[in-house]
Image (cartoon, rainbow, N blue to C red; front, top):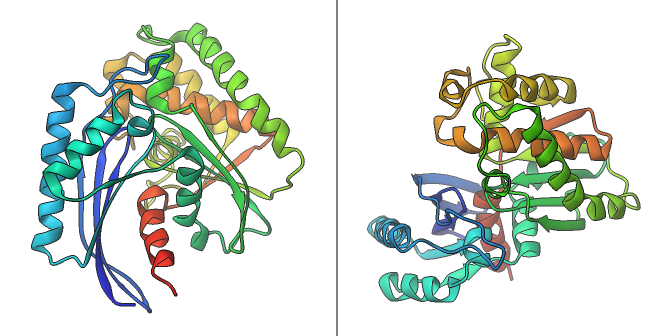
Length: 313
């Protein structure tokens, strides 16, 4: 198969465009774009609402991305949405606006679909694992847990534990957060994780693998805190639970204005970084896991892999 694909990912934290040339020999990147728009500002109990002003900006950004795809002669254009749109009170209306504006329909991924697609974006990088891996993708609105290997997905869950959602769940967050905020967040994450951790007991795995921009930032900040050289790739190869605890303890007493000064920090993630660190720490604790491996991949790459599979006879 030879084709040029324009793939747009409507995430909770930002919108991503990836244009790639697909051929039997692999993929060649043509263009990579990003719009830092949060589709959801508040995760209400009856579902998040997409702010009209943000929706207008998002429509402009999506329209520009589709125009970029057409200008670069894409043979196929796909738009997919994750937790923020999936759970939004008026996601049908928003998706209709995207279709009217661009002529491209939005594929709204279910939680299981998001987990499966995320795993597809990672699976080719799991070749060094001695056995099945447990992959987690920490997004803004949800966290996907997927157990599998190159041959199959054996177990998966999508949980409402995104770093943005968790930050808002314990709002207003003190500055600095303090150990009391950690205790509140730990209780929330523990309760949400418990059924999945119990279910996983029947499914052995060898390695915990984390993906997403927040996991990448976490690994970079740990490297900086430990005084190690910053890695050349997207993330350090592994993070120890003890290092993560040290970082979380430091964050509890660090004023918000100082977060951007941390070596390796992505300034765009400062306001929800602390919650992301706690989510990962609690997950590792609950699983009895002392080492987190990191890798590239996730929903963006998985959407392209899923498209390739759909085109295979």
